[in-house]
Image 1 (cartoon, protein in one colour):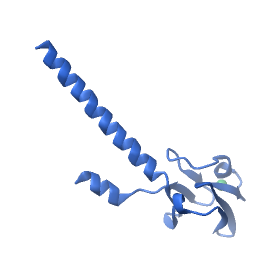
Image 2 (image 1 turned 120 degrees about the vertical axis):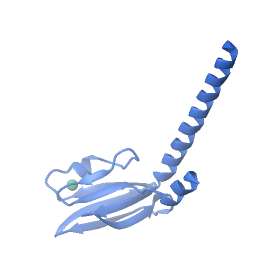
Image 3 (image 1 turned 90 degrees about the horizontal axis):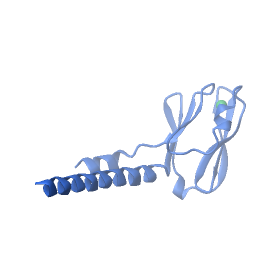
Image 4 (image 1 turned 180 degrees about the vertical axis):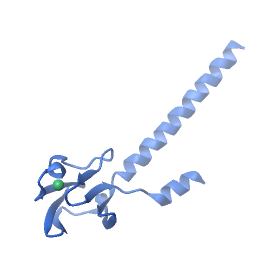
Amino acid sequence: MRQKIWISAAFAALLLLGILGSVLVLRKQEADRVEIVQDGTVLYELDLAGEEDRVFDVEYEGHVNRIEIRDHRIRVLEADCPDQVCVRAGWLDSAAPIVCLPHRLVIQAAEKEEELDAVAR
Ligand SMILES: [Zn+2]
């Protein structure tokens, strides 16, 4: 009887590890796809894995966020917003989006709806 409990406990632990593992893998894949959203509208959807290094400007009512893509990462290089929160945020990581409140700009990991569907099926 006791052994049976151990076996089901071990099985449950394995199952949990499997779920955690697939969640981690999914999140890692998502980190390559980012979207740049301004005022609720998606301006750019980028696959960082396939992006060349470059710098480009996103304008908002005469103000500018200069965005840099380098080594398949993305950040706000410079901006003329008063708080500079977006610049200080540095490179985007999948956990936290880069937000420029004064310019209503968000750079965040894109959600992969196709993949989520595939998992649900
Ligand atoms: Zn800013």
